Length: 224
Image (cartoon, rainbow, N blue to C red):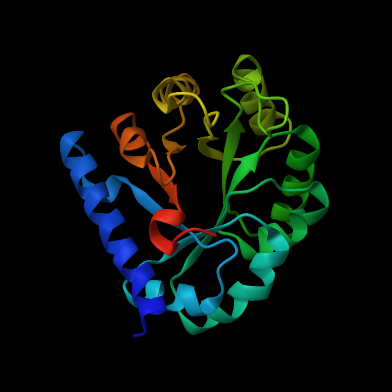
């Protein structure tokens, strides 16, 4: 491999070692945490060595970028899983349901309607995470904590969606732990087992607070 190819592989190894340590410290099994390698903006030359090193779950922010990169990669490497971790427009629900195995950004009724329609039409059922805007930031997508219980109930009862878990992105300048703890509390009272929490800078903290999915990009692939 060239230096450019080995850097992501080395990054993956470092992240994996830290996940193992965080799970050990939290007295959790390593298998309880899924590493989502966030490959947004990186091309197949950067992604392929990471697949070869054993990583199977990847995350993308945009439907159109994923459509350009992933069908060929998935065809060449059966068993890969692709997660949409960025905001999803309702008019992209058809493409998202067709391509992604999980969608982490369910956050409004119009999107629920579009997803329910496409899930029924395509008979394909990606895992769905409701995004919680724990910092109540106006510029950020997600359901506010005070609206979360009602929204989750509407997802289930009105739209017939199966919700797998919750996702959050703490405010950049806040300590992440309270946001992770709040998300976990909302999940518990709604009977949800999966938590998509933690990125490159804070995934060990997220694991300590119950994350089942950590979304790690720059620590594997480098800066964008």
